Length: 249
Image (cartoon, rainbow, N blue to C red; front, side):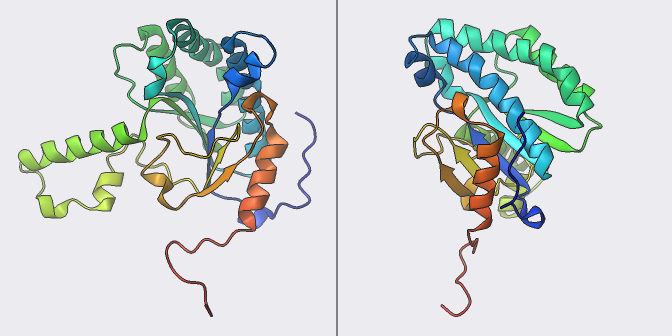
């Protein structure tokens, strides 16, 4: 990773949690007459460059949308590549992530029978191996959908009500949040999406209610740690009111 320009960054106002929607891998590859899978391969180094950038600026949580519940509808060759690629990353990157103090989390429906058992075991191994790390929490949203996550939380609460463990009146925003995939994960302060598309595409729907959103035209394989820093700098110039009014307005 090249040296970052941190002159404009306020180290005292770094967001707690940044989410990344890594979009544009396929278009990046197609623009170079390469198979779409080449774009995913090129995007891997960018993700881990951003991990290093997050460590450099003191970010505590970084989440990345790696495979959505809707991605199963893609061509079988691309889906198979992404399943294998997830395994390969875990094999090649786990040691370096552990040494850097990164704790790995996987967020999504990991019980889905379409996920290869070997992949699932490697994810469990990665979480166990890095469980004591706390320098940076890296959340990989894999087989993830925001609506599915909320629906799963509601099913859990419904079962608890039926079992007499709680009453319907006790269901609150807090009790729902406590039953999401990773209850300890803070809501994202900032979500960055690459490729010029301006939507959140079912990513962290519950937590993103008041997230700041930044959309950049850069395709994901051309993104990098400096662009992540630049997004954080832009975030630091925004005023977050969470539904309230500015004083004097």
